[in-house]
Amino acid sequence: MKISVIGGGSAYTPGLVEGLIKIHRDVPFNELCLMDIDETKLQTVTAIVRKMISEALPEVRVTATADRIAAICDTAFILCQIRVGGLAGRVLDEKIPLKYEVIGQETVGPGGFAMALRTLPEMYAIAQDIKKYAPEAWLINYSNPSGMVAAMLAKYTDINAVSICDVPIGVQHFIASLLKLPREQVKLDYVGLNHLGWFRKVFVAGKDIMPMLEDMAEKTDILAMLPGDDEKTLHESEMMLRIFKKTGVIPSSYLQYYYLTRECLQEQLAAEKTRGEVVQGIEKELLAHFEEVARHEDAHLWKSRGGQWHSELMVGILSAIHNDTGEEYIVNVINQGCVPGMDPEACVEIPCLIDKRGVRPMHVDRPSPDMLGLMQLVAAYETLTVEAAMEQDYNKALRALNLNPLVPSLEIAEKILNDYIQAHGDFITLK
Ligand code: G6P
Ligand code: MN
Image 1: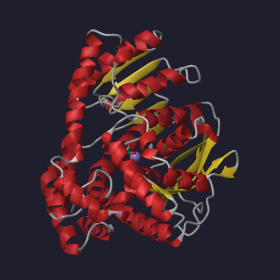
Image 2: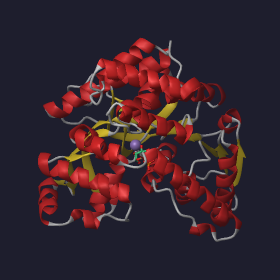
Image 3: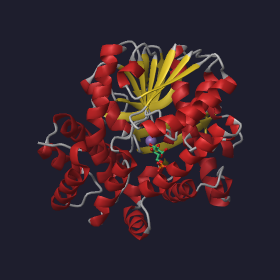
């Protein structure tokens, strides 16, 4: 059994491989194929992955290629983590809106829109290759914008696919660690879209413990209990906690851009670097570190890019499909009536059961009017953005961007869109 990683040169790959090593007993693969168009990064990451695999699973062959079709042929699972236009593209996505005093963020607002315009045609091309060369294979996608990728795959292709995000599992882990319980014992009533969701209830042994969590948030320093000392996570958690205290519902960290828009914008305008620029630095350091470890040290000593939940989620879903377990995970899926009040065709992020037939969404309670209103608006924006990307339609792109709640006017939408087209060159082509 072969497993392939498209975007295998990513700094996230060693973390992913660590997850694959853990599930090898349940998912006995014998080839791991890393594919990337950036051959330098691919070489660096392959070297450390070879070292990790040879220490843990000497029977597994690690292959590396820049040829996507070679990676897709004869494979059972394709794990996809591409970034079309690279981190340089992300930096443009974030910086251009800031010129017009609009939030500049990787997946939310105009940044997510530009990322969709670049990513969706490429994901479609990957899906076409899968259809042709490995029609039985499963695509597990982590590439952003994950919700719009899910919508595109469902509407324009019929391959086996799941599109995921680690925000829900991250919150589940945090709550579980507060209560000193294993993650599986914490059940979430979560509803939303990708990077726009709410944890409405938290169940432990069948009981909703939200009132207890609210009490805990009032009386204790929850932030001090966060594992690790990552500045970004700390800041996101602070914003989430503030929204939680005011609304009684735990928000996805990305809701800060909708609920605390002005403050987020001021912070971004005052910051020396965008997040994409910070990540460029992190990536550079990590790649140098990987080279060092692959050359000299014990493979266990590598430092991760973070994203351990993304690895756990990806391999968990892979194992649920392979072993037909029907486990519950929160993923992106076409609504099909599971979220009352939402268009049945809209792509939502809700708890689903996963087995060898794929993703079965579970019914959830109707969102409150404020949640539903925001979900409907952003879902409409996403639908129009997906169409604009797939039809390369300028007019639809402009209407989509104007609809995004973080964009203040048609004129600003037009300026941002035109700047994106100019700055991204061949990565964004609209007629
Ligand atoms: C979370 C999101 C991902 C996103 C990442 C960005 O994990 O779920 O979708 O890619 O954050 O993190 P970064 O460190 O690149 O800013
Ligand atoms: Mn995500």
